[in-house]
Image 1 (cartoon, one colour):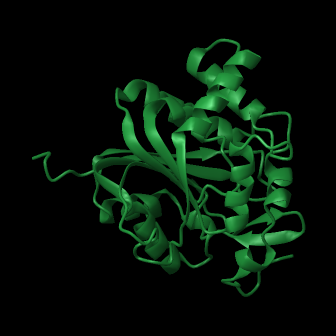
Image 2: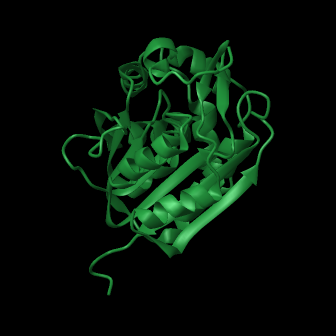
Length: 264
């Protein structure tokens, strides 16, 4: 199904987390967009010399794989999404329910990036336990609101992958949404973003969902407008092949530190 006139309620009406997991996370290999992002996430966390008291994954969807690298570096982790169905899928994994999606291949991959050695089943189980321990809250998040969590919450680390850019086809709406998302980052905090580059839509089964066709320049401008330091921002556009037919052939990875009023 092609998107002709964008339907702002498309996620409420058509989204199925099980279909999404089958489409994008049921392979016996690591997709190249995940490979690229996890490499940079692991490198940043290992080399940064910093831990984060409170972190949040905004627009986590029904996934937990990106939390593998975060778990050793955060005191607590909150997961936020617009759709209750996505949070319900995560709750299944947190409770280790039999029908929960199996993330072991993704977790194993990250452990091997961290250690440059083979991860054992015991290593995987230990990291899964740590990930579950660090998640202390599941939250509803609506980026159409200026205060998307409703209470003005701030986090030392804000992670977001394919969220604001996948919430709308309107560049203007995206700017508002990414601004709301970045407002969750505290002064002196860090935002880590993964976005599709110059894509208008992605497929899940026979359905099409929106992308806002953003690029690196759009993301750099949004970070600067939200108070992030351009001198402490790394922004990279990476070509990928795995999802070229379903979604996109380039991604943008951004890691940015927010200005602090105490820094001067």
